[in-house]
Length: 491
Image (cartoon, rainbow, N blue to C red; front, side, top):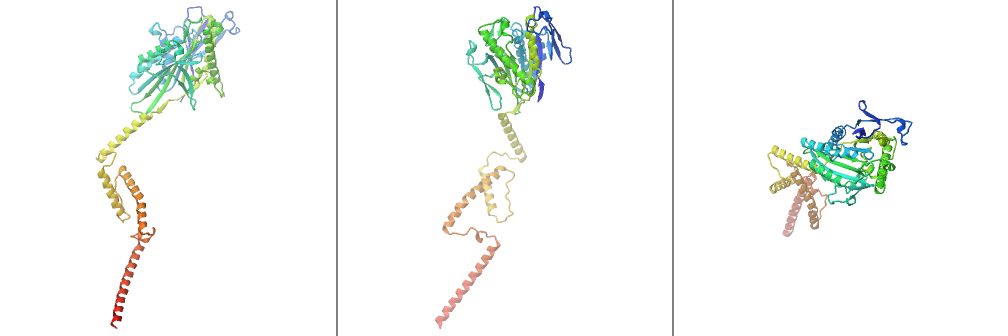
């Protein structure tokens, strides 16, 4: 078990506009810090104008000049290594619309160097698979979108969706052990990096994207790209099952500030509501002695239950914008990250025994033992006794049963097949004996406890001796009687 608080990082979005005064300090021993310095004349009502400095601590702060490769090496690579070791992992990006969440998680389409965390993680994992010959790896991928509190499978193979509503809806089911299962969410196998990237591209084409005043291509939903990994050593029945959630949350900002209406306004309400429930869960987890955590309030918090206060190693990327008009939202994002950093997860190694592999291993072990026994005894034994062996055993049994010597033994050798056959033979004899005794009783009844039933006893020998003496006396009396009759006739 690994006990660890959620790791938090901050990334500042590059901008060409006039920015607020901020500073980044990564020289501290305990991590980095991000500070916003706000002169009172810049306060616009959302920020307490009595306070001019806001300082927040992170594991590390990435300034505007940081590229995608550095983000992956510092944030995603350690999480991917824990997933390879058999632990669950989660990386999610949080921030307002237009702060660069999708760019960080998925990447940009223009340049190869703009690849985000998902494609770089896939490339890293499959490179590791090709180098590691000591393990056998199997991967599956799922892509879930939560739009207006309804889940959709972005990788459904049975549909060619022209719009989001054509995709199958995903529902949440909970087992007696309170484990979450997603019904209708497909798991697509991916044998190599190309297959995995094709699935990512397919899912991105089905995502709900709309234009807002904050961002021309704003993602209007929460998306969870999950890599399911199964690994085992060749010949071993022990499996390690782990999963990596890569989460791109929808933008958080005040609806009045965006100036949207119609369908986009409805989307913004659902987004803010789900993020509000997320904040409720974060607040409840950060409070001590809190017995109830409201995971069930929204679909997103239910899906991320393990990632928040459960069996997972979780990392959060706080995306901030330093434009003057966005400083209030950036400070709100940093405050949220500070509450997230108080949550402690307990990650367990996900190992289990595969029954099918265990059966195969035991069969091989039995076959090996048979071969070793054949080498020791010099006999090649089959699973069943031959007819000659059966006849020989039954002859030995008859001799054993007929021998009156109580110290006689039956020599069968260390062969369980012969011993089992002896038990079966004796059982059959015992079942036949009552019927035989019944037929004999019909002809001449005899007491079951008679002394003659035990010919080898001392009492029986005495009885036979007395019978002989009685017969001899009868003969003598008969002779004397004959002589007496003859004498009378003469007289």
